[in-house]
Image (cartoon, rainbow, N blue to C red; front, top):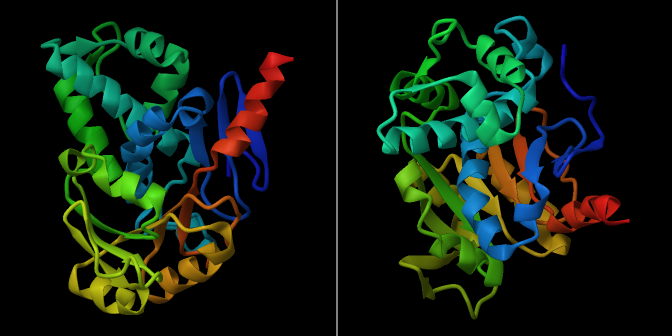
Amino acid sequence: MHGAIPLNRTVTTGLSAQIVYAGHHRLYVPILDLCDTKHTLALFTSRFVLSAAFVGKSNNSENLNSEPIVPEVVIQRLPLYVRVLSQYSNSDRDVISSEQLGERLQMTPTQIRKDLSYFGRFGKQGHGYDVTILEQKLRTILGLDRAWNAAIIGMGRLGRAVVSYPGFAPEGFNILAAFDTNENIVGQNISGLQVRSISQLATIVKKLDIKIGIVSVPIEHAQEVIDTLVKSGIQSILNYAPLSPEVPASVNVNSIDPVLSLQSMTYYMK
């Protein structure tokens, strides 16, 4: 894969880290944000964006000959572009240059132009990009021109924080179901969701057209839960357990582990 970072590595650049799990998609994580609970919650939406981009897609051999390969790190930057473009659009600015995008994202204009070139020609040299058109096209590329239904497994403190976060629905991500194995939690109503037994997962996934699974269970239960999601037909998983799960090549897992980010950050504190 030209330009892609090798698998099975954790790469740190500046104040950012890429957490890479064997054979599966990389996750671009701003370290400082993940070390703050409030900022971590604010980043959940962009994690969902990445899952949406990967639904039904994988970089396995079957896809290599059927469509152009885009480095995963490029896909991971697209939600950042969308966020900046949305902010510009809300401020009534019609045009943005690669230099302005670069200043906001601490990237070089050359890198931004190269990223966008994977998906076609945008804007005119010397004139910049039409903010509205570029945002719409990037949303379409990411699959954000439709709604995505998600289910969460694990309704402890983290799970409750996730379902109470108001930033998902405006971006088209609907958490429609919540599951747990604890009999004391099953049946409770949490943030408008009735917690169901995980034994009902496959039925609810089909009934509600769930495409994304969110795993917020302790590490000792995570692999079992992920296996259950996969058996239920889920191919995009957002995982908060600190492990590298084993999944089929067709399944995309984005994993978040703040401890890894903290461990990388200490490099700059020596």
